[in-house]
View 1 (cartoon, helix red, strand yellow):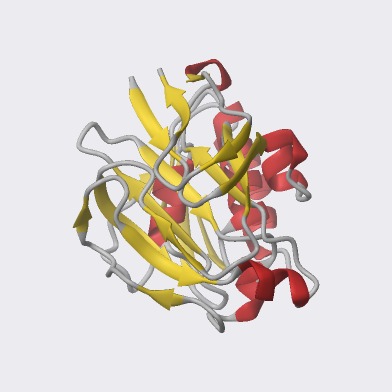
View 2 (cartoon, rainbow over the protein chains, first blue to last red; view 1 turned 180 degrees about the horizontal axis):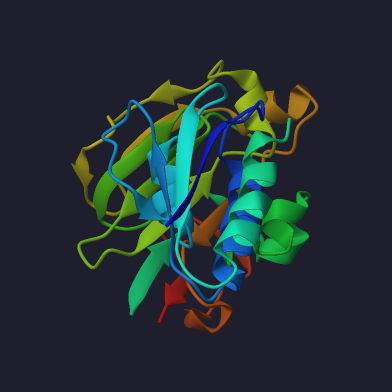
Length: 87
Length: 148
């Protein structure tokens, strides 16, 4: 299981464009990938669901943990981490 | 089939006409938009369900079947930080389709240099599932599209 812990730096948090790009990137992968917000309920949600990601309500400065397992997990997590940490 | 209602009166337009590529390219999902009447008004629930996210400028309602619909009140309106928007419901509320959720004034949003156009998006839906998209004048609560 590969994991990344990222602080979200976008002014709008993981909403709007960052959220859409994040979910689009996750959806292109064939492996399962989850995202959780530290300090929230903590429960990981499906990173391929825009509804789930918007419902996490990740704000600027929040820390998220993304998890994936399988072929290409590290590459995928690097891509998602770059999207989530972009300003 | 889930009928998705126009959240406010105005002109129903294609999502592709929304002046924000996040919506016009359906990055968030398929749907439609309303170019609202430039007068003070309320934005209502497009479907019956629970308000799972309520921001002053946007809300998501999830129906009993798990389908979620996003209503975004104007473009780049997150920058207004809630000024000009009054919440008429609370996050977690169960609401029937047509119930007022936020009051606002599209004319004020436009006067502030932003588009008041409201995307209404079927979340996690394939593009082919959005059917019978309305075009032209709509009242709040009229059917905007069918989620098949």
